Image (cartoon, rainbow, N blue to C red; front, side, top):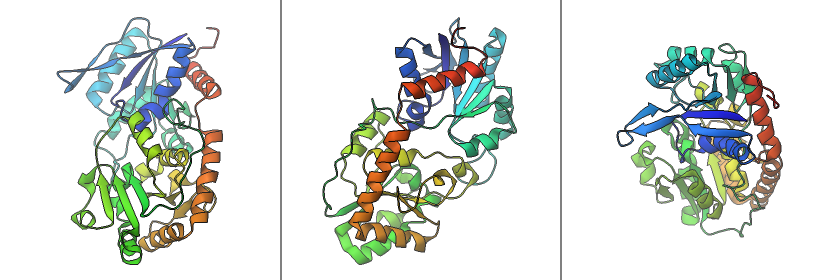
Length: 348
């Protein structure tokens, strides 16, 4: 049995908390193959953090921590006890998410990545980016947890009126949503209120221009990831859009939105960028160049072609349900990665 200390700044509301490590470790813990403890505790009414590393921990798994003081504390404690550290990330920790500029703390974070026993990442692109810092980088894909997502084939009603297009999370970042604003305006002119855009995320990134549109509704209430999954799967969305700017940070992003929309039976249009390079245009989705005219064309194609929407949704569901759902085999694969990185075998 491997005793794992989890050090993360993420909480239950964060998709990556579940998609990257918590769900798979829950499976392994139920099978008696690992014990999991949180080693970063909130203090001072949630305004700070403190370390609580129990005796007997075999490895510390760090997930998306960029705070250099906290990283130093974790590494100092682990080194003093001879505990290896593994970094687990689906973000490019060195780059700012809104530009191609290195973060202020990039050099410091890079040093801790170098000192790690290994790094587990979500994509091949991110693995290639971090290989120069640490040659023990392993790719493990994001997976949907069937205890969170209902993986039965989604049942979609006929064309709803109005036809509802959702844009969730990252898409609301100002540099991302700018690609689809002209399409939102064109839809207002062409379809009136028969087509509406439902923007779901942090409304602070939305301009007054968007908020004034009569074919736009905004939902910015935060919720735990389990609640988000239930709500998405029970909404009657007819189409999803995922605009994503081609920044170095974004190129390292994973296909989370593809997994979530596919499990919910929602046909989707994605930016034609690295994060969605493995998808097939016209089969499991549509891919749009990061150009407003391209987005107008693809959105109108989906709006006006129910058969295209249905076909993409069905094929995406088949793809995701057959390849990206957490099961015992995936859990064993993750365990093998951990054992390899800390130099253990299953019998050790």
